[in-house]
Amino acid sequence: MPAIVTKGLTKKFGDLVAVDHINLEIGEGELFGLLGPNGAGKSTFMHMVSTILPPTEGTAEVAGFDIRKCPDCVRAAIGIVFQDPSLDNRLTGRENLDFHGRMYGLTKEQRNERLNKVLELVGLKDRADSLVETYSSGMKRRLEMARGLMHSPKILFLDEPTLGLDTQTRRGIWDHIRMLNDTENVTIVLTTHYMEEADYLCDRVAIIDYGKIIALDKPDTLKNELKGDIVSLKVEEPEKYLEILKKNKLVKEGKIVEGVLNLSVENGEEAIPKLIELVRGRGDQVHAVSLRRPTLEDVFIHYTGRAIREEAPESSARLMARFRGMR
Image (spheres, rainbow, N blue to C red):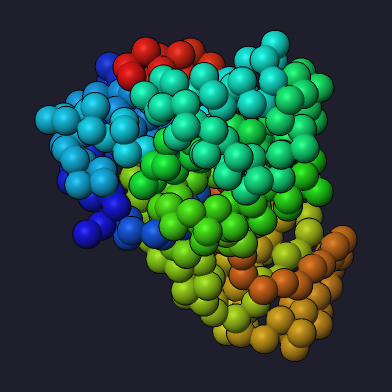
């Protein structure tokens, strides 16, 4: 049985269509990513399937329960880690987890058993009795994951799980996410606008933009669809050279991204000297050049014609309070 199935799931805020008729199936035990810019509809989608927001149209089944007909059943089967921190800094790690267990009706014995297990899973057993205000950002994120697992959910939602963390801490969180997916046998659905995060973690990725899924597959499959290499050229008048180079047999596809020509070519190492010579032959210079294999960023550019944009994340502290109040 799939962990999540959505049918025509849609959310409108006035004239704004935040999520636009999404049909999606996520397998049990899958580590699935919703990849796209902030404001694309990822968090809104997650808030609907976790019953925080009602859909305008369509519906979904989560862990076998209809989000409209049995929202309490859905909430009992899922765990959530929101974008913004929502821990009580005046409590210890253990007290935060114990409180969460009480909210889900776990007995004292059940809470103690799960507390020890999830603290060990996220590597915080030795800091369980320290106040959360003494934790680093990475430790707080791991504690939030532990909290999301306290009641043994079938599905764990992670909304931008590494937002604002430094590179080293982010890598550590990635390893914990993978480990949780393996050892807890839990389906994980994460949203992110970090391309490398989705590439590293996810079994499959849905690229979402303006509320629509524009691409869906395994990360490697999506990248391989572009074929060849990506050559980036920094030149004067990139619009002029885009038209010129697109007519050249060397170039399969071209886009201008933030003033730089991104060209899809069959063999980058052989193509670069010829492309530079072509520009120089017209009396201009190539100011910078780079060569790389296609990334998920290139997949996004291929489908949208622009680089992924980064905006301020929406606040989620009040959503956690609202979700708790639903229990």
